[in-house]
Image (cartoon, rainbow, N blue to C red; front, side, top):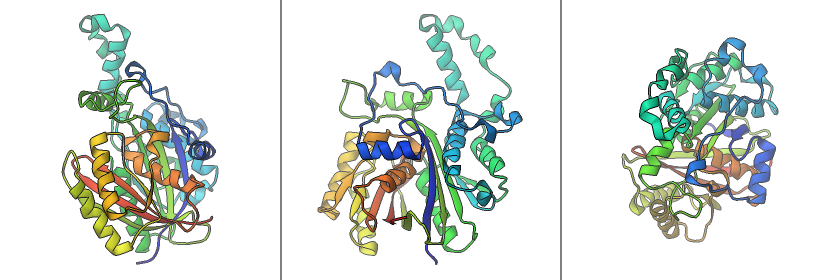
Amino acid sequence: MGRTYIKNFGIYSQHAKSTSNLLEVVCCRKPASITSAQRYVSADIDVTRRDLIKREDRAVMNTISKMAVSALADLLEKMDQNSLSQVMLYSACDSEEHSFETFREVVHKDPENFWRNVSDFNQLSNPLDMLRLLPTNTLYHISKILQNHHEGVPLRTASLSGMSALKMARRDVASGRNSAGALIFSSANMLSFDSLTVFGKLNEVRYEGHQHSGILPGWGSVFLHLDDRPEKALAELVEVKIKYRPKVRFEKEDWLSLLIEQKSQHGTPDVIVRYDNGIVEQAKAESDALDEVFPEVKTVNYKTLIGYTGKSNNLIDILCCLNDTEIKPGSRVLLNGTGINYGLGCILLIKRDA
């Protein structure tokens, strides 16, 4: 097996709309804002480069795809578009639940008369929504922009989706499947109606002045380009390890199993990026295991800066690490992650001076 390198990236997220914006957010360490329950709604999101989308495709784009196209536009500021036509594609994106969003429109329109106005649902529905709701919607738009007709791999493993895509891409690049490398992209929105409703029912959304435990929901899209050539690499991707644990909550013992194995195979990292998404009980399990296995290692948590984005959170953590000037080139960085009812995992990379 050969080696795999991270060569470039693009981002478009709630708190960092571009590469330069991300550098500013990470270096300034400005915390993401916590708002009131009523104000946790997605902003209107549009593509930053409409010229990338053909007119006939604009009508069938969903919000997740708009994020992805804008993140791709950020990547294309640094890369030639033609060079991506032969890469292998791996996607880890939310699909869109338009029925939930449409009901939210009806509710917000007149909360006191919801049942009287529920017939408005039919008027707000559109036949094109069938295309917007497809889980392959984002993959369709990205592959069309890049004129890329290699197989696309859409992955759905909860909040480990980005890590799962990275694991598959790393394996394929290291085995020499495609000399052009791989392009991984992940778009997700934890401010969607269904995500906020579920975490709200669990009493695990962090509100201004409300509670000490809960996620800080956000949205974001990420692109990562990998290949097997070390020239101008941002990092070497050493390992992506995932342990299958179909559980809702992960305990200290789950983390110990992963971290002890990781340490025996790769030694002690210089920096650890915690998964900690704001849920205190889960954060304690991870922290206690880290204290036992890697007691002297510095840890950081970027979700306090960028929010928790669900499927794309692990890849956003990688981008934050690459832009963090406090993590020096040559540092071995371990990044943790979990996915509800799927498992937990970690990424080991060596940051390089590109």
